[in-house]
Image (cartoon, rainbow, N blue to C red; front, top):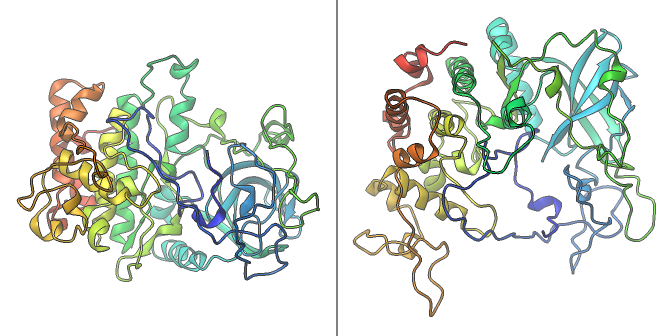
Length: 475
């Protein structure tokens, strides 16, 4: 797999980017291309920004395959190098475990020595203007609806700044939560040990509860003039049981390279010491063992880094590709129903264990792939949207008849690729969710009701909460 430089990484939340609950594709995969940016680091980084642009591309460090952030991302303006045992805010917070990472932050389990509790410490990259908007929204929630907000959104407990070799980092202190919805399904005991052909997806009771609770959170945000903007399973967190009395040594992550808790030692290719990167990288270890999920459980939305006030929408929302509404893909239009479209996709995904739209990354043809899936599963785009599809002639005749499904067109001398056009309803049935026939029919109709091409016809979060199927879900 090619090494991807820092600036080729897509924006996503501080948890993992949206990935399907079940990894098995619903259709033959298309070729994935990786587009490498030239704006990468030189072999010897400067002590302060701006970054140098090397020609040819060079790397600072020996390549590592540890599943965590890319070590090349440690440079002025980016991540702060953190080691287990580090302390922050004049000794108040001691880092004892890594919880996750994303393009713009790392998140750590820390012991709050002052208040005798555990917290999640989110350390943002130093060059991050988005943190201002995130804090504005979190403060707004606390000011206008603190009690309701605490039920639906992970609580901001504090904030401070930390000065390090890569700049000044805003640090946000949140209530401690368990794994996200993408991670927790892998930890359910019925999927251990993993067997070939096993359908790894939430039982219907859990899936439906997750959907209703996150819809309640969306309704709360929308009522208060806020869109989440990055509504996906990676930003839906399970609450923990009473963990504050647990000894720190029980939760502490070991510096164990052999046990794959940390990476091998970070080494520069030129043999020099590097003050901008940590000595090792930590593998994220969410607190699955301490998470309540058997009977009733609580889900909250996290990461307001992509959120925005509905009255002041951003130029480019960070919604994951497979969950983007067609008008966002084709025109960049931002409206109050983008979260609702994502919710409709997730109704399908959480109940079937399969993403509704598989969108490959890289290569510049992701939008075409997504739009081809949309037309296959939901039907033809309306004329006003289809006219905005600049590359539609690669796939459709002037009469709008599909003749090719190969993204980027038909190579010279080759025949067009045609794939079976499978509707959303047929895909749902093929996944064989654990629902009886009547309930399956109800769910498919609900997904259709949500995923309408005309944003004005999509139901609001409040209207969806009144839907008989959703109203009947116990949480």
